[in-house]
Image (cartoon, rainbow, N blue to C red; front, top):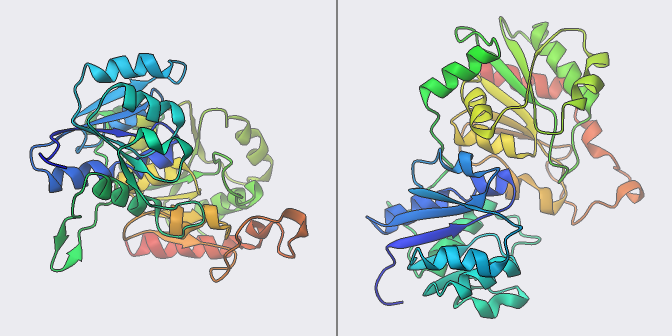
Length: 349
């Protein structure tokens, strides 16, 4: 490759969880290339979250309505040494090529791969290797780097964001959440990318925690709702016997602030789960066994977290729907199992 790149663009313009699990690439590059400047290209929605990463020097916002020539013109003026296309699309690959970025790294398994000059043979579709590790491999191999190691083992690069104390204080005060009382966040929504735990089970979990049926004392439950999920409150309330605090309409940095101050977060496989883990909060993730959604690929990364599945030993290549004898398998996860895990993690924290 010649001279080591010093000004590097990471490109990830899709969903929240994907973006959070791409942030460790910046940490790896900083470690492998001391003094390198890392810029991250993201969508307007996720850009404020990326700015909370201590490893990213600058965030550029991509408007998907802009054509490849317009994006390329913006990037060409920045004179990047290298770009890593973590989220492959033809438009983005074309823009990197037109921007004349000398090193353009990405997967070899796309028809538009000829626009990249550092192609990595890395399959993802049915892989059960963690998405974060796929991203690290793509960045390192695409730029011809050895992944940093210590004591003969690869260094771990968990996702990491830093929440300013002022942002956390203002956000909690805005929603009337006492800072001196521990709280558990329940996030019942999801992006629809996997099968979810039923809403009535989430309601029963809220009641169990607030009734202290599993031995939990003085814990408040905060239910967070993402954009477009406000109707979940109406669907959850008829099943509730206790009243949680409800929070909706947050920006991603505000959501990160709430999650960072929680004692624990319980959620389906969804972006906020990864935000919480990146902010240093322990999480319980509820996952289905379908391979593209499997926790070995998309679970919370790093120690201190827990995953609950209908059957931890089963992996389905795809969901067969009603043809499957275990159809709607998420319903088989009992509330008692989740509440016991909540109690265990709170007691050991």
